[in-house]
Image 1: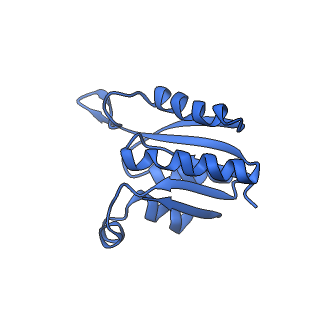
Image 2: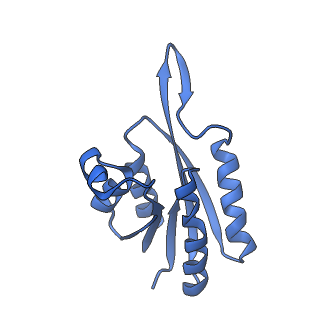
Length: 138
């Protein structure tokens, strides 16, 4: 049913809950997995400023998440994308399209449904633009 799964991780506590769910589904469906981490960057006074979570680089985050899949015997690859603020959802959808994914799994960052609709959260935008099913994990 789900031959190819894209798992979007952001380094947050809620985002970390996606990995066990994805491992379980990938094991059940004998899926391959692409893990995507999108880091927002901006220019400030001539410098490139990383807007990602403090204390962990994008490469380190991908390595640790990929290790979870590899330890479970699941074939997994990782993609790190750098974008300007507001383009995160486009990159997640693009990775899913390029990998011909059947499912995207991602966290919701704990926003209420109303707040996400009003503010246009990343998860809401992915659901609106994805060509495949999207599973949101709280």
